[in-house]
Length: 283
Image (cartoon, rainbow, N blue to C red; front, side, top):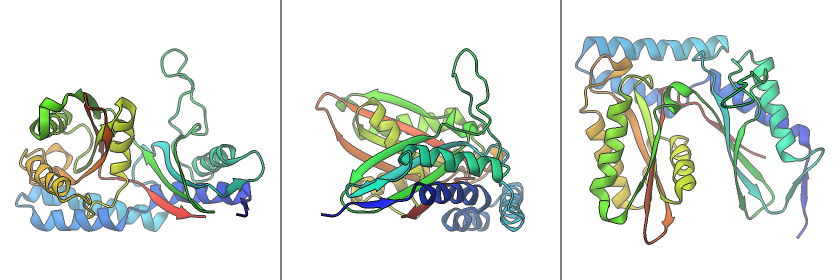
């Protein structure tokens, strides 16, 4: 089989466009959910907050300016074809240059520090990104990119449940995590749940779940029903838009799963605010 070479510049420009676009243009799924939530609300205050969010998203798109001042840490999920090579200095270097250009040319806030504990000096270009890579058959690269704000990221959790906790244990952990987060992650939120794998795999699954269209459902009908149940229970908490009360605490709950060890049942909750930024491209 022949190997396809993709020029590094093509990767760089694609990544730049993804991060600029995801910060300027809200996804149709999120916008549709916000509008539906506004119609469903009984509280005028909740309706007003949702209207302000919708209007803000429209201004961001029209003016090509960020919908939120926290333009996030760059996160990418990559499906990398096993018959692809990237020219120049390789894939990661091309991605980093794309992030650098997006956050500089696009006037996006640069929020990354070089050391997490001691120096905490801003890298001044929002690099390095976090890249999750899966090798897949083929000669293409699919990139899903998002800017993850930390008002919501800070409200995320992971717990190593044991199998005896069962589905009720999973429900309790997810609902407790959302209740603890309260108004802090800028509701209405999108809740990503990762179940299975190992400690770190569950967290990756939860993040990946927030990148999924919120109208989609898990392929397994049992997990699809659990998504619906959790969404219903979360929206009964009366946290509401901006934490001011109402029927819309979450726009969606997405679950991703993975096989796990016989002795464990890792569960992670990744919370994303209503500015659920992500865009995809296949190269």
